[in-house]
Image (tube, rainbow, N blue to C red; front, side, top):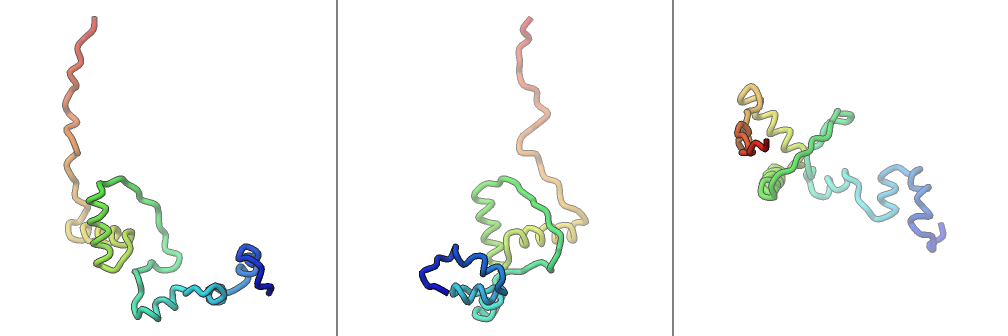
Length: 115
């Protein structure tokens, strides 16, 4: 292979290489190699082919930091941490708890009649 070729020129070749060979070509580590070096997996993983769906919501920066810290302390991803937390709440309580609304919804706005 000509050393003057860029990585982009070699991309078609990479698709034909096994993951470990492509990683070796570019001096990268595969996940299993990182696991061997560190001695532990970096985070929990779902079984191959496990179904997942996207769950999104906006939270305060403080809440996000708390979840990130708890997940890091547990050694798992944020997604895995949230799923485990929900499972634990259901297991402990039989269902997810309900929470109070952020502001009262049963108040009427004081709108003057214009007639």
